[in-house]
Length: 244
Image (cartoon, rainbow, N blue to C red; front, side, top):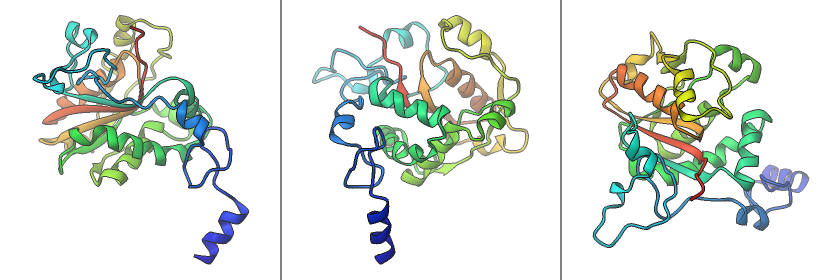
């Protein structure tokens, strides 16, 4: 306790977003907290897209689906997101993804755990979306794997960081439309030849940092189902929300 107190004096807790002093480790100052777009209220049960209309008193929230999911059903069952990809959330995710801010995975895991609690069962296996080995070598870590491990720590669920492999590098998807994203990812994800069997007969929760069109998660979900997964749900730290 004395050592911890001394360390807090030397290195007082700082806001994750702006480095301002805060009371607790991995906390946010008031300004950054207000700018943090946590998702709550009505949302699509399949992809987490915020919905303007709330469920009526006799309507099951699990029956709510956005137009995109109604038009093109997903290969997974349910999906959740903790944040809207904007403001402080966007800055933190870019820091995690490109700025070596691996410290952000721990609080992000706690935020995601609250969002995905209804999707979990005791035998759920948490699986991150993989990077191609070249990108992993350049970045030195897979941010989705860090989130998956943090989420597993929060929930007590098992984690298999290498259940899937990305067999070929894929182009950057920024700026591509839905169909182009799906085409670029077609067949690029598959079960790991040694570890893929861990999904056999189990519910799997796929984890990624951001969902835009859902093309990457769709390719990963199809690979998990090919490995024998009983059901696939998805969880992302943030959702790129359509303007309605």
